[in-house]
Image (cartoon, protein in one colour):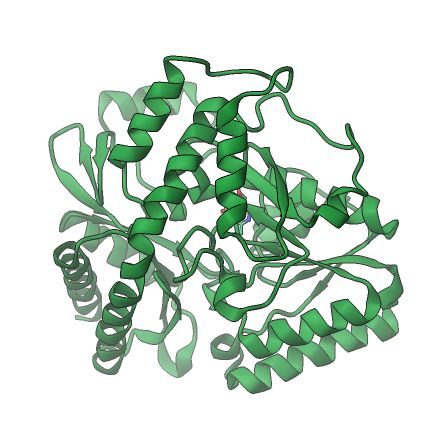
Length: 422
Ligand SMILES: Cc1ncc(COP(=O)(O)O)c(C=O)c1O
């Protein structure tokens, strides 16, 4: 154990567990540098946050310039970065998103989105989809069902939150169509047995499920939900905290599927690692959410907003290159799937790719990720897992990763899987 690790264990509350206790001292592009000088390819991208890589030049310059002028206004005064960032983000968001407000973290924005839905509809019911991850605060953990452990010992959670299946075709051994039909049947059972649709304020859904195992929502399922929502006056809140800002090949996954959210929740990559999140909606809906229905001291921090404004410009430049990187990654991973029995499924959108590690009969292999991640780290690459059994590799390189580094990362991971199989 290094000196820093032992100080960490002495002083820091153990509840906050780090995936890797290696000390890093610098990040640039797709790489981080450890205290001993070793460089690692960061294909976890700060959990899908540094979509432009570490410290991209234009974001660094914008944040630095703002830091030297004003770094806090606390909801008391107006400042230009707030408006610049809001305008720039709305300009790339789905057409239904005409205004937004800023918060600090994903969980906070999710909770705020539910407040918008409850207050503007006057209804209390919130429907969430099993496997969804929406944060860890007391309200947001009620909406989170990716792992029961996250909710353990925190009951009672918020009332009037109902859980219904999200299609998991691979996990259920079904085709996408069968899984969609099953999930929709269950939703209809819920309407019949638990809550009438007229009492539901919102569907809260990740159009591309993240932490729950990297499952794309599918056009058929999401458009069916959109129709049900329209029929019953239910708002559709899309949580794109992880899947937004270019990660799935367009600005937002709702644009990949061309399905409009009523409320869009943004976070993570919005400021490429500086703390910021946002809730977007229509002028009409926000006009029903009066001043002081919500607030925050730090939300929309000037430095984070300056960074976010630059992030939008940066992603505008790199977005056209995501398809090529995505196609290349899928081609290589599908080839690897045919060769390695541990790879049961490769799925995702854009550069949000899940590699499902299994044993016989496509059973999730909870023991595979640990050794594979360790072998990869020994070869200079950092990855994270997801899924309730922790058996899905999140393959989420920065969107502007070079083709050379992309291939290097895939080579390292495939070698690590081969080593695990030996
Ligand atoms: C889809 C989604 N929503 C919400 C959150 C919570 O964000 P935060 O950790 O910033 O509170 C996350 C975090 O991983 C997420 O992936």
